[in-house]
Image 1 (cartoon, rainbow, N blue to C red):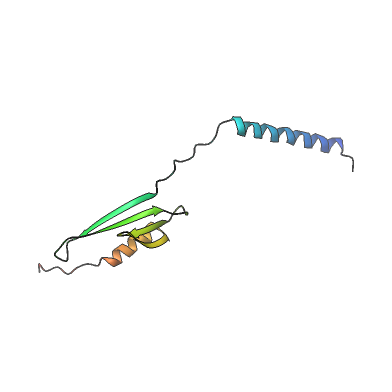
Image 2: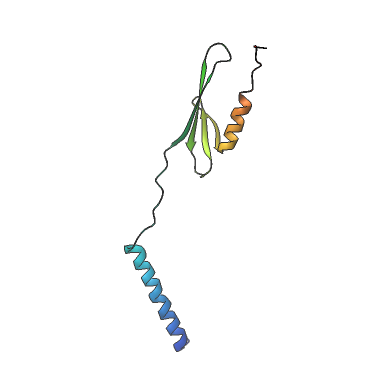
Length: 105
């Protein structure tokens, strides 16, 4: 083994003490506040369509996924898409329910 110089030994001792102090602070000290655990069902959209003459209700449920900004989307009890974002969900909803021509002209 090589001998350590006094300067290097002083450096090693100083940082070992700092590391031990940080570890003790971590164990006994103040812990950061974590956000609360999010629920499984994050958003629910209910749409009642009166255009066909009889009201039809659709239920769109957005569940938590393993990505922060995405959802697992279930429509009327069937899985539609996994890992889809909020804006993509609204875009698909807009395209699925087009405008109906007005008969009041």
